[in-house]
Length: 54
Image (tube, rainbow, N blue to C red; front, side, top):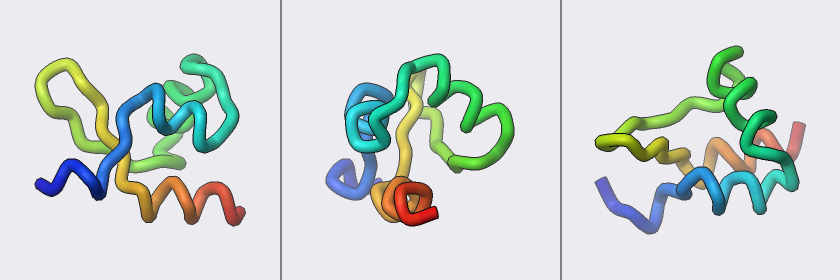
């Protein structure tokens, strides 16, 4: 997994201009796919961009 292709919670919240609670709701609803590595959630930059476009 190339780290440059993925964003952390904080980076994703900033990119989407949403709160951590809103990000959790996107995960739960399946609107934003993620990978979990240890305790960290990682999001593909491509998926974040697609969500921003919609």
